[in-house]
Length: 384
Image (cartoon, rainbow, N blue to C red; front, top):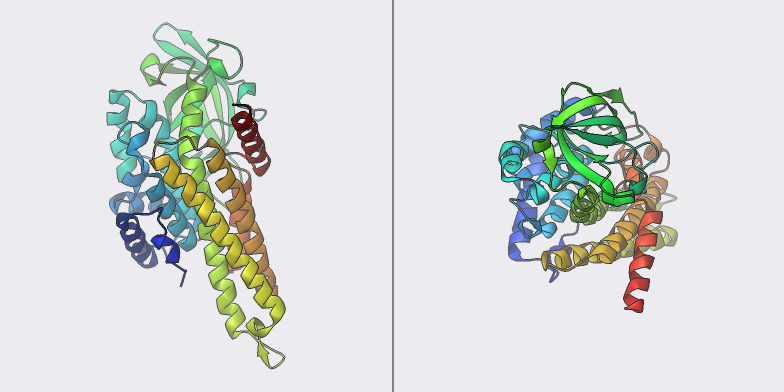
């Protein structure tokens, strides 16, 4: 049983604790089948389940940053990740994939897509990364050229989550209003649009829908552009700012599950006439794991609370993401070590968590990028 004392921290209101309790009970009853190798089918099913149960509405803003409860998103991601990594993935991608529409979309765009995303009827995707433009968004090469009442897209995107199963993609492309990051715009591109190919899939150590996208004279109407021309970088960063803290929360969910599995195993595993938990080396490791989880949780929910107060959280979100993902990797590695051979057996919870956590230290800004962000903000604050 996961420790729930953190729900009493002053970051939360009673409605947040009630939300976590309700979701935890739902997940315990509904997510037993949310594991397996057919990630496409599982994710499609999970999106429908999460939508039908009403959980996806928490990830969908009704317009503007203030409409998103960051603490609720984080609690949902932590709880889902503790139960099943693909459930967390399905929830998060519905929010990230539609976030640009939530925050910057026109009334017509919101009306067309957000209800379908919230109900689980439509699967969303966020297409920013390219082969040579990951963390360095200004290096983007995918282009969108205005041609009358349409934009013509050409280029490639890669490492796109939900690639191959999404019903629509929010695609960022260079429109050339200014050099660097200031000449990028965002577009809604439905799956099946002529000139758009999302069939090249990518296999990774923790299976989930992932693809490379190709655009060849793909025409989309001007009405598909999200926000103003040349404002795509702003759109992308604002969207990521909402969900970066929630990546930390997902890492917390993985870490808590690993810790629970490890401590239960240590208490019942017999060794040399005593249990594994009786050894001081084991106790020291459990203490380090517990302290690391609490430290990461404090940073995560501080950032979430500050954002819900309307404060800028660039530095705080980066600290949370860096600390929580790195700590979760260490906690899960320690759990695998405690399980010994069982910990590397395919399908064992510790082995599954070991594969699932690794990507969180990379996506939405690798740990090294978070370090740069933190240092940049610190230096900026001191200079001011």
